[in-house]
Length: 200
View (cartoon, rainbow, N blue to C red):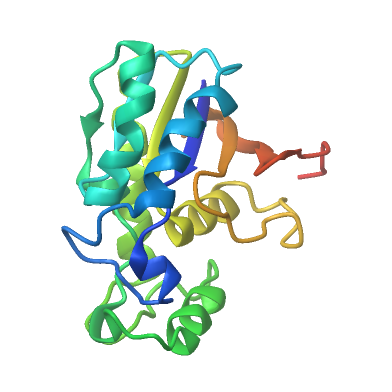
């Protein structure tokens, strides 16, 4: 299948550089609401058959204009939420959060922020949500999620992806995966660029 993972629109927490990872989270600000409306045309070439969103306010708001245009009712999946910042929730200092996420590797799945979640825990719940989407049987589905979650998931399911390609996503940018959990995923688009075929 073709799976499109979209980062939500801008919030004031983004502007203030706050680690806002827990529900309900900040709503979209005025620019974020406009980004959500603009997304409808920017992603119009994708034949989206189903739409999913995390349970955080900003993700649900981002999905609304697209859902209206496509005549779809978004399905809310809590597993698509942002990676928990734990004790660093709402901190303006991202140093420890970024360091922990960048340390995650196949041989280092059980580290996490104090009070947060480990790589193993995050991947289990995010992968479960993706498998639920797959089970619905659509050829093309989109989900609205969160920057760190989308980036970590994309890098994990396609380990051949060049880290330099996988730059942090801006608000309402997206990545595209093709494949399945059973057969493996390939990242074919990251933000505005197609991903050149790469060796496994």
